[in-house]
Length: 115
Ligand SMILES: [Zn+2]
Ligand SMILES: [Zn+2]
Image 1 (cartoon, rainbow, N blue to C red):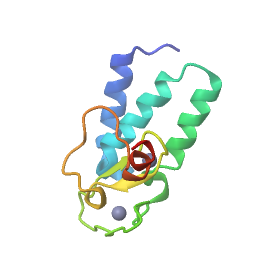
Image 2: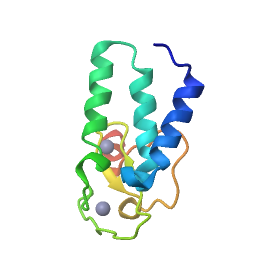
Image 3: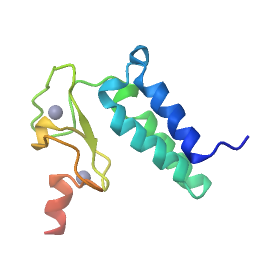
Image 4: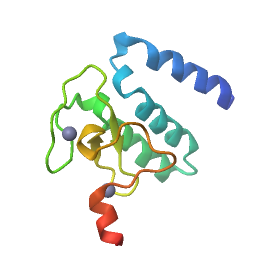
């Protein structure tokens, strides 16, 4: 069955806003992953995106992030971001972010490699 992008997006938004699914904390990140999955151009890309989705914070219920020095934030609204290069999951707090960056995010480890 074909669902247009708009309706699929609406569906995800509704699903992810239901707190009983336990994903509200990481809603933005989860939606971004879902979009990546939907944009996959071939089977390999789809599987990669799916794997990333399954290993994301909501699936693992992690408290500790991939930062070398995790602060283990415990607030309800703790937010996560994943590096677009290596796929590490990091707390906003641990990388000094206060809000989601525009476009892609590259972690300090990856950024150091390109400098
Ligand atoms: Zn952390
Ligand atoms: Zn990285």
